[in-house]
Length: 291
Image 1 (cartoon, rainbow, N blue to C red):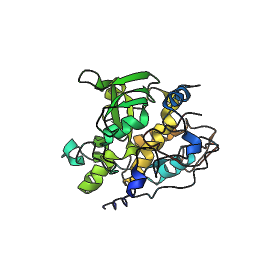
Image 2: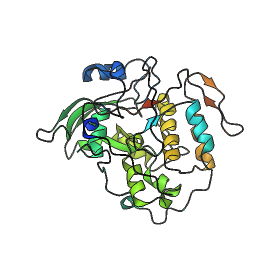
Image 3: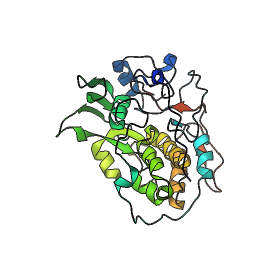
Image 4: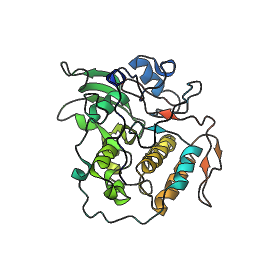
């Protein structure tokens, strides 16, 4: 079944200053890039999504919008319990072309989605002159998968150090229901900011097209956010999970803070976070940090 396209935002909501539906409250994330990186590297490590008290986030995006929010712990566990459990479909017919234009500008802000994600996830970003702050030339990534600090520099021999990962890989999506979606919806899935993360290149290469049953980030502290994102993307695009994948996601959700039982299938459990508010995916120039 086709998923309705998002309602276009007015031009003033698409400015590249972190306003609009992608952004957190300025009271939570109004900081310069050096302080964001310092916060991101503090304590146990870095993270792209976090449970942060005192931010007062109340709005939640429509399930059929490409403005993605993510909730961890019991919220993701409840969503996981609603996902159909089926066998993986054959990969027959799959190609990257089935998911439309790579890095399509689905948010209509004038910049391709790869550069949007780099600008969102890197600190200390510089842009190529004359591109209206679209093309990212350099920046520093606090990699959520490995915990490494990676200095990104655009270039033929250097750009691959930071790659953009599809949290739910396109091959996995194809084999768990995306082949039944229309072409426009598949393109939105492939370019949905909630399904995209800037990460360490070699670590991403090691993931390949694996699902949660075959691959989880080396850095266990990120399992909660990673599993929560996978569940939300699958729920948003009406995809299913295999039994092994469901069990792996449930175990990963146990990495969420303050473990307690939640509404999962019999024999499984998930964590109950102290703060269950939904957090939006940060906008370009905004960065959520680990508590």
